[in-house]
Image (cartoon, rainbow, N blue to C red; front, side):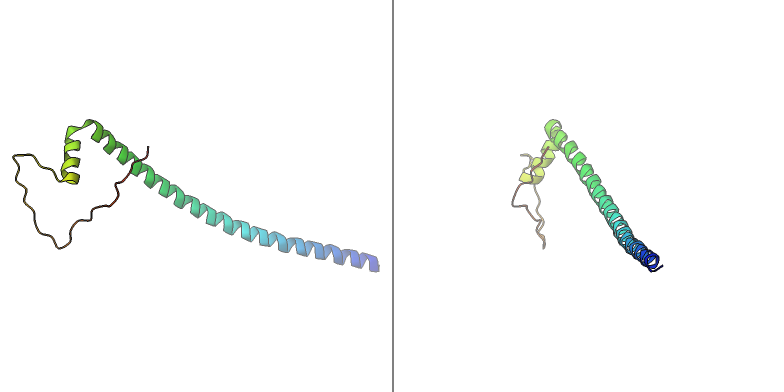
Length: 108
């Protein structure tokens, strides 16, 4: 009788410990799943934004390769060039525009 009691007590202890381990892993895995799902959604949103920006840059690159008006606009804006018959009027500004120190590179 004592052996059966010890056997049942041991079996109960094993079931109890197994249940505790199961609960710990279920809780940890569900938290991890939720966290990773949220991280994945953020990364996908970032990838979509970068993809849209890349598409816009590809359109601009193609325009600079083939559209004379786009080339002229870029030269006028960046190099501050004008046609010989144009008059340039400069307005004094309290906040001068920031000029980047390094040129931006486009990777394809």
